[in-house]
Length: 91
Image 1 (spheres, rainbow, N blue to C red):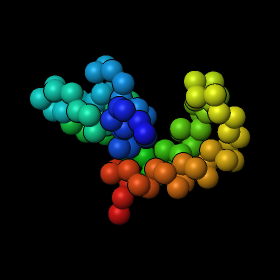
Image 2 (cartoon, rainbow, N blue to C red; image 1 turned 180 degrees about the vertical axis):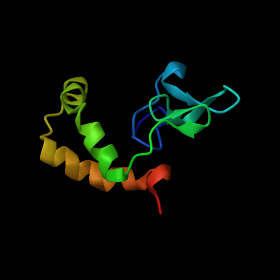
Image 3 (cartoon, helix red, strand yellow; image 1 turned 90 degrees about the vertical axis):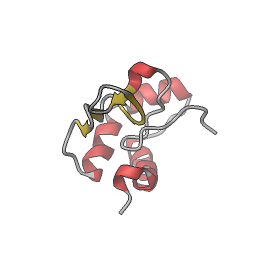
Image 4 (cartoon, helix red, strand yellow; image 1 turned 60 degrees about the vertical axis):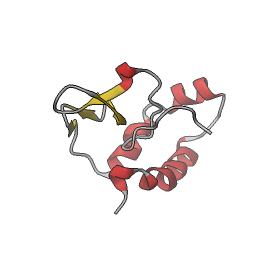
């Protein structure tokens, strides 16, 4: 189980305050990361499918950090199952 809050848009663990997005008043939020959310709004108007493809750009780095060896196809399937459970993508 992850000990850090997870960005409810991209799934990134929020391990430091600098990784956390900001609300319109400048306060940090533990709901979204700084890449997805700044000044109380999402930084990109992006679809779920686009977010999945965006996350895949970091697959090599993620595999190295976690010791996993996911292929792009496997990671895509995992993201297609996981990201819709996050707050931004729930219907």
